Image 1 (cartoon, rainbow, N blue to C red):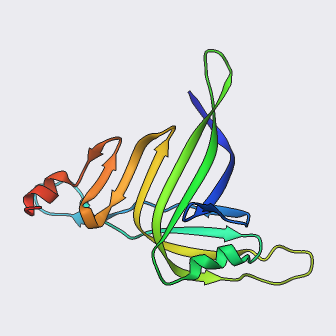
Image 2 (cartoon, rainbow, N blue to C red; image 1 turned 90 degrees about the vertical axis):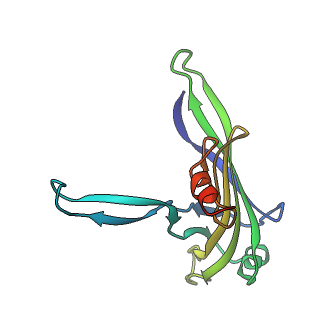
Length: 170
């Protein structure tokens, strides 16, 4: 299948669709890394730490302020779900197929802006979220799970923190 594009998406807060049109910037997965440069190495190598990912931050950007979107400002962990229709093209049949991309996050507001007020313009209000848990599913298959509190960072079913968790006696 050849990946196409996001056809459309909806944002849900605690299972209820937000009454606002939003763009979502999903978290960036970034490992902590150290440079290794010593005798016996021809140059410098950057080694990642699988057990130390940098904080995951997401951003939701709304056209205007809505009472539902303001719920995200509460200083408590929120359950946010993004459902997207993703198009794929079958290279043999040339037919387009739609798959569901589901992103579920437990997150807390880190910062927010109500945006600008200008005549005839969108406000571009936004909220930046700090994610403590995240799951990404494609057509019902879990492809990424991130749960640092429970030592889970799984990609396509393989938990890359399992050995670390075992070594620490969990």
